[in-house]
Length: 300
Image (cartoon, rainbow, N blue to C red; front, top):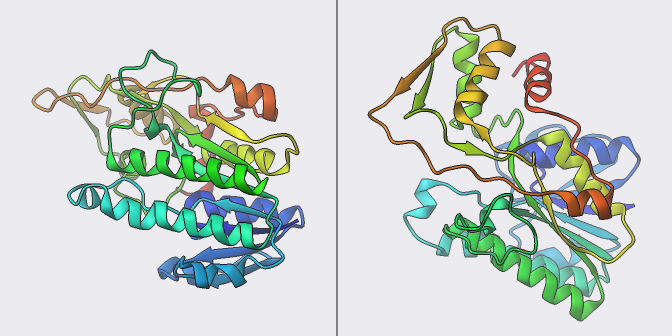
């Protein structure tokens, strides 16, 4: 299959590229040409730089059968200070341009990386695709807007469209070393204690990058009608559980330090993934410990 994939320089994009190239797909890796763009590409992958304008994208999607749209501006404090505008410019505009270019080139299917951030905290857990979205962040609002655009263009063009609402992805994300998990791994390597806010009870849905790749490929290959699917760990992993497991896997005897002067983060959030199991045949294969052990073997 000939596939265009955005966000190729990211952790998930790189993992998808390796899997698709290994099975013989021809992939056009699209990106803005940042520092990671010079990383070596697997065989069968052609790198193309784009500004995500419509005029730029239309020729790049020529002869493409499917689009996997992983590229996005992720949630970050700097962008949040400017409200929704940075996310709409980077996420919503690029998604609509991709959809218009895909329609012009008669692309058959379009897979969007959406997010758990579209859900509202007041919904009963686990969150299901049937819950009315109520995002509480500019990033979540932009992702929901992208979902609506994908559904609209898919219906108008008879293009199969899928949106995967992904939980927080565990992986060796070299571009986001400030994240809690990789900071904890680095401290564990140096046998330093792991600091936690409050009681460490705050919890979130986590899923290993290899399981997300599996979901993307299944969504791409499925010939039935598209839709929205939750892709996550189906439970809430507390910060203290994550920290303790990291210390055990990486052999860190330094333990944990709880800072009672700092408030616990937002409470638990996790999704039900039954629809993905039933309709895509997706099943999570990696639990938290297995994922961390795999990262240790990779030298994270």
